[in-house]
Image (tube, rainbow, N blue to C red; front, side, top):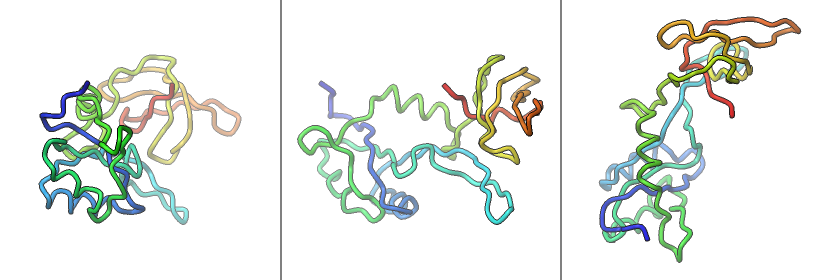
Length: 171
């Protein structure tokens, strides 16, 4: 049985485009929130721009204690659809180890840090830059956070050097 005496992390489903409203109103009510983000390249009208997107779109992590009755007002907070619940209407707790792992992978602005343990031969997807969504294979670890990626482009194999922050590991 998971102890509910201390503040724990839970997850809430957001209303469409409700992140900013939810975050503002939850903070105003004294709740700690966390939403991991990642940098992406956005293509619109033949233009590329860099932006950020949530790792888990439509959801936000909220820290509170179940013994504290204040958590019930989260479901009526602007921007929040509902707390995710599985056990008789009580919110489902996220394990501390899982949340610690998420938080360790993010910086102070909740942006994902680059993966630093790439191995030669691993498959990766580019998440930003002109080759967004291309899938390639790690050819070489160049230096620091730079990785040389090999991918097929127009029936030829091309090698490109990118920051590891621009890559997403494929399983």
